[in-house]
Image 1 (tube, helix red, strand yellow):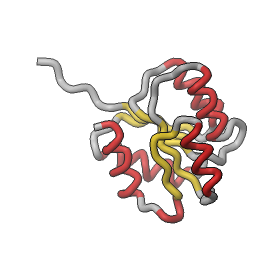
Image 2 (tube, one colour):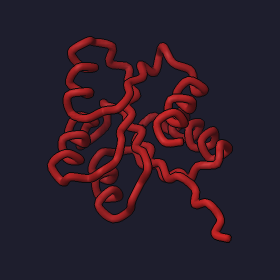
Image 3 (cartoon, rainbow, N blue to C red):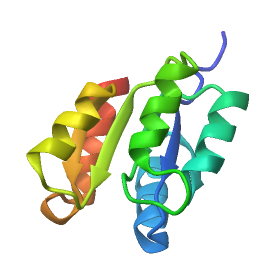
Image 4 (tube, one colour):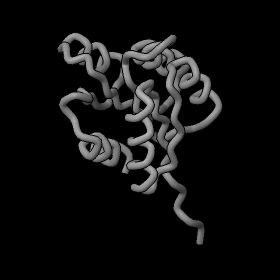
Length: 124
Protein backbone atom coordinates (compact mmCIF):
# COMPACT_ATOMS: atom_id res chain seq x y z
CA UNK A 1 0.00 0.00 0.00
CA UNK A 2 1.32 3.42 -0.98
CA UNK A 3 2.07 5.82 1.85
CA UNK A 4 0.07 9.04 1.67
CA UNK A 5 2.18 11.80 0.20
CA UNK A 6 2.73 14.89 2.29
CA UNK A 7 0.93 18.05 1.27
CA UNK A 8 3.43 20.58 -0.03
CA UNK A 9 3.39 24.24 1.01
CA UNK A 10 5.40 27.15 -0.39
CA UNK A 11 5.99 29.99 2.08
CA UNK A 12 6.97 33.41 0.71
CA UNK A 13 7.98 35.57 3.64
CA UNK A 14 10.89 38.02 3.94
CA UNK A 15 10.78 38.18 7.76
CA UNK A 16 13.19 35.30 8.44
CA UNK A 17 12.10 34.54 12.05
CA UNK A 18 8.43 34.32 10.99
CA UNK A 19 9.24 32.20 7.92
CA UNK A 20 11.30 29.84 10.09
CA UNK A 21 8.62 29.59 12.79
CA UNK A 22 5.94 28.81 10.18
CA UNK A 23 8.20 26.26 8.53
CA UNK A 24 8.83 24.49 11.86
CA UNK A 25 5.16 24.51 12.85
CA UNK A 26 3.88 23.30 9.46
CA UNK A 27 6.59 20.63 9.20
CA UNK A 28 5.60 19.45 12.69
CA UNK A 29 2.00 19.19 11.42
CA UNK A 30 3.20 16.81 8.70
CA UNK A 31 3.53 19.14 5.72
CA UNK A 32 6.47 19.37 3.32
CA UNK A 33 7.55 23.02 3.35
CA UNK A 34 9.66 25.13 0.98
CA UNK A 35 10.45 28.74 1.90
CA UNK A 36 11.74 31.71 -0.01
CA UNK A 37 11.96 35.40 0.85
CA UNK A 38 10.97 36.97 -2.47
CA UNK A 39 8.20 36.80 -5.02
CA UNK A 40 10.44 36.33 -8.05
CA UNK A 41 11.91 33.16 -6.61
CA UNK A 42 8.42 32.08 -5.54
CA UNK A 43 7.10 32.33 -9.10
CA UNK A 44 10.14 30.45 -10.40
CA UNK A 45 9.61 27.65 -7.85
CA UNK A 46 5.88 27.44 -8.69
CA UNK A 47 6.68 27.04 -12.38
CA UNK A 48 8.90 24.04 -11.63
CA UNK A 49 7.15 22.25 -8.78
CA UNK A 50 3.58 21.46 -7.79
CA UNK A 51 2.34 22.78 -4.44
CA UNK A 52 -0.89 22.18 -2.56
CA UNK A 53 -0.88 25.70 -1.11
CA UNK A 54 1.07 28.96 -1.07
CA UNK A 55 1.37 31.11 2.05
CA UNK A 56 2.49 34.56 0.92
CA UNK A 57 3.31 37.92 2.40
CA UNK A 58 2.20 40.92 0.31
CA UNK A 59 5.15 43.21 0.97
CA UNK A 60 8.42 41.61 -0.20
CA UNK A 61 11.50 42.78 -2.06
CA UNK A 62 11.24 42.57 -5.85
CA UNK A 63 7.95 40.97 -6.83
CA UNK A 64 5.28 41.63 -4.18
CA UNK A 65 2.41 39.37 -3.16
CA UNK A 66 -0.11 41.12 -5.42
CA UNK A 67 2.17 40.57 -8.43
CA UNK A 68 2.62 36.95 -7.34
CA UNK A 69 -1.18 36.47 -7.31
CA UNK A 70 -1.38 38.09 -10.76
CA UNK A 71 1.38 35.80 -12.09
CA UNK A 72 -0.38 32.71 -10.71
CA UNK A 73 -3.56 33.76 -12.56
CA UNK A 74 -1.75 34.67 -15.77
CA UNK A 75 0.22 31.42 -15.85
CA UNK A 76 -2.95 29.48 -14.92
CA UNK A 77 -1.22 27.78 -12.01
CA UNK A 78 -3.77 25.87 -9.97
CA UNK A 79 -2.72 26.55 -6.39
CA UNK A 80 -4.64 28.17 -3.51
CA UNK A 81 -2.92 31.17 -1.95
CA UNK A 82 -3.33 32.33 1.64
CA UNK A 83 -2.16 35.89 2.18
CA UNK A 84 -0.52 36.95 5.44
CA UNK A 85 0.42 40.59 5.74
CA UNK A 86 0.53 43.59 8.00
CA UNK A 87 -1.53 45.54 5.46
CA UNK A 88 -4.84 45.98 7.24
CA UNK A 89 -6.78 48.10 4.74
CA UNK A 90 -10.05 46.77 3.36
CA UNK A 91 -8.93 47.64 -0.18
CA UNK A 92 -5.78 45.48 0.21
CA UNK A 93 -7.91 42.58 1.42
CA UNK A 94 -10.41 43.06 -1.42
CA UNK A 95 -7.61 43.27 -4.01
CA UNK A 96 -6.01 40.06 -2.68
CA UNK A 97 -9.34 38.19 -2.88
CA UNK A 98 -10.06 39.65 -6.33
CA UNK A 99 -6.69 38.25 -7.45
CA UNK A 100 -7.58 34.79 -6.21
CA UNK A 101 -6.47 34.59 -2.57
CA UNK A 102 -8.45 31.98 -0.62
CA UNK A 103 -7.79 33.43 2.84
CA UNK A 104 -6.25 36.54 4.41
CA UNK A 105 -4.45 36.93 7.74
CA UNK A 106 -3.22 40.18 9.27
CA UNK A 107 0.06 39.09 10.89
CA UNK A 108 -0.19 41.49 13.82
CA UNK A 109 -3.69 40.17 14.63
CA UNK A 110 -3.05 36.44 14.04
CA UNK A 111 -1.16 33.82 15.98
CA UNK A 112 0.99 31.19 14.28
CA UNK A 113 -1.55 28.61 15.41
CA UNK A 114 -4.39 30.50 13.70
CA UNK A 115 -2.41 30.65 10.45
CA UNK A 116 -1.58 26.93 10.67
CA UNK A 117 -5.26 26.14 11.32
CA UNK A 118 -6.19 28.23 8.29
CA UNK A 119 -3.71 26.26 6.18
CA UNK A 120 -5.06 22.93 7.44
CA UNK A 121 -8.66 23.97 6.65
CA UNK A 122 -7.76 24.85 3.08
CA UNK A 123 -5.81 21.71 2.15
CA UNK A 124 -6.90 18.84 4.35
